[in-house]
Amino acid sequence: MPRPEQIQFLIYPPSKELIEEWRAASKERGTSLNNYIIEMVEMSRRSENSNQRPALSKEVTDLKEENAKLRNEMRLKELVLQKYENELYVLRHDAFSDTDQPGQREYDGRLVIALRRGRTMGESEIYSELGIDTRDAEAVKLVSNQLKGLMRYGLIEETSSGWRWIK
Image (cartoon, rainbow, N blue to C red; front, side, top):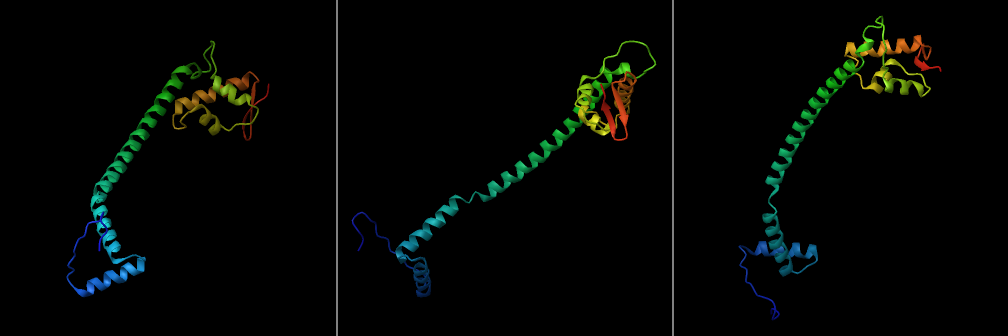
């Protein structure tokens, strides 16, 4: 007999075997047959409501595609930025392209600061510190000419492991 606050509902299962399977399953769960049936109905309803899995899967796929696209765009922009930085370096330090020309030259402050740290630096480490692409022959030549100029002034020396500040 249902309690006054409960509603009674009558179920006609298709077979006795099915009822026995439900009873066995409810015993395994440690609940009454009535509660087991209610749990199963509610679980089914929730799974239907949360059957947004295909939509979520599509959204994840779309986001992955967008992420890949944005990563590619970022790589391209980084390459363009690197190219512009190399061009800017060449323009700023163009005075070092011909070391035989007389005149005043301004050395790259980042180069001087890096060398003054007191440790020996290889050329690849210097290029990395300055943000120079080693494939840019003009920028590499300008850095090399600056290093030679600093060596002529007796400020740095070239060792077997790289360049070192001596003053």
